[in-house]
Length: 114
Length: 118
Image 1 (tube, rainbow over the protein chains, first blue to last red):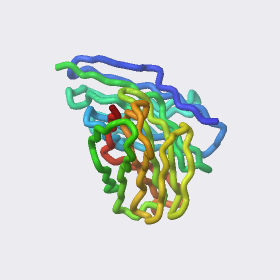
Image 2 (image 1 turned 120 degrees about the vertical axis):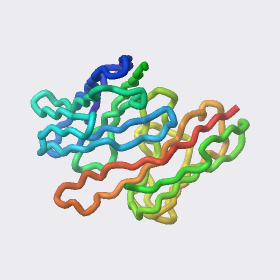
Image 3 (image 1 turned 135 degrees about the vertical axis):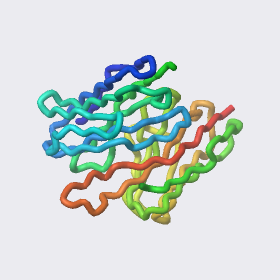
Image 4 (image 1 turned 90 degrees about the vertical axis):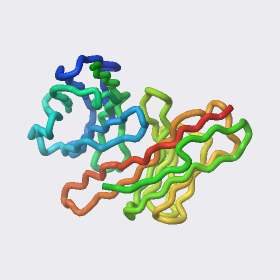
């Protein structure tokens, strides 16, 4: 069985603050893939990043950064110097190697106030 | 990046009507998916297809049906809409790509259809 837990339901910050979204996953597979998606108020899901289980290197893309730690089964996402346009629901997802389906977490709603 | 389209974007319809939600992608992806999502809630997979003439039910039971006669087209049909079907329906497609041996198969999503059944 696979499971993704996003324990934070909602996070509210003031513009320019940093915000970290937690994602903890469970899988018995040794090969798996992790993803983050953003869902703005318009409703579509926007792909942000992917990681495979053999690549623990952290990644930075502009104001976004990701921290993948296999030892704690976590794939956390940080937005640095948040902006109002970052307000959205963020989903973490897991795919095991023998399955094309994704398991999504419940999502974290981020509200950035001006 | 995949180009995936859904129509209509918004639909308000009365109970008992038959509806079809359209989903098309232009990238030749063999795998396609339908998710149901209530506002502010998590996504639930209701149908998926791994290719033409292949359809499977997802993790969440749904009264809807799907078909996959062409690679690019994956429509979802409700024979008799009810208020309990009110939700957002998201279509997605994926392809392993050419980055062997790593095959992320990330899913790309359409804009969604917001369905309201009165």
